[in-house]
Image (cartoon, rainbow, N blue to C red; front, side, top):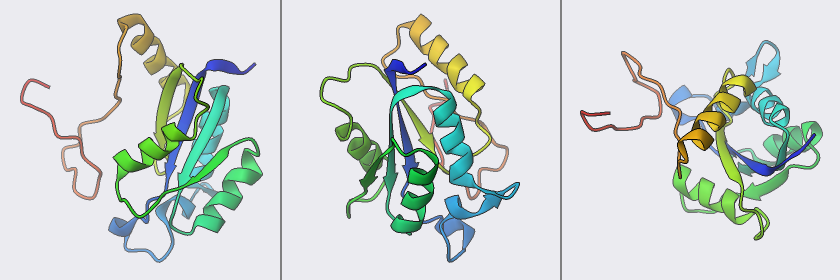
Length: 154
């Protein structure tokens, strides 16, 4: 059953330059499946009413995988303006103007984040009456990873 109050935006525009590979990171495989396909399966398991994927690098190859796996997904091309924030902005703009539900933003290069974890995050978000809830992790060595800078109090 589709959740009418949920939309998912999948950030799939990155080049993956830190991997030093000629192909986008999200097209590399984990267990014989492209990383982006794992994330698409998670998005599908959430039963969101709207799924938007923001693409750019190797656009056609990435979009083909997305549309094959989730034909109802909306494909949005990221413009020349770089960055995660811009990709989210474009994804939000692709949602129907009347949509007023929750939006989950997933990175196409994080294949092991499962639907149960995201459902727990959504539950915590709703119980807290939050405007924004962010799931992140602490790494002893964040070299090569995207970062969220925090103040000393969290």
